[in-house]
Length: 251
Image: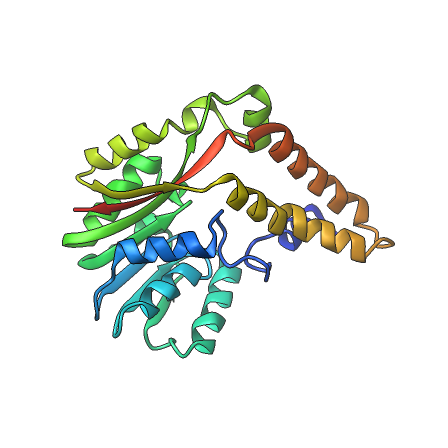
């Protein structure tokens, strides 16, 4: 198994234990959906939608609402299309395999982007401006992005492959939204339990489960090494340092 195959084995879209590729509980997700308050017939777009679980739930929350998922990962898009087909929403939710920065439709009632700010060359600042431009006057934005809970240690930076300037504080993220013409209606952050469950279900858990089930396979050592590296990076590095904020914003 080549390195690319190991990455595919541990990828999020193929992991049926993940509802979404972010540290987010069911209860927290429900609160975000309630705060976004999509109205009947709302038009919703999700930039970096993955397989569209959150987008689908937002559409389900509003009779007659429609959703556009913007996602470049073909595996995620394929899972998303199966998802909406299975829920009878194929006529209300569509996926577009284009880069977020190249998607030009506007006039939406709600624009969403969680953990996808890197899709824009200018990062979070450019992402927030793009989300603001995508919604009609009076529309809402749901933006999820990282921030430093505390000053990152060398181990945290190494575990993430990050630089100190890659994120700011939570207040700096809120101010960045304000500079894009958006005002915070609700600000919540992923708690430690959400982070731990996410890491356990995602790369670490999926790879470990495969390794335990395939002890004699040739790539066993490579998969185990990848799992150990991720475990060290999280528990010995960025756990409690990297935060994930969910901002519900008004225009």
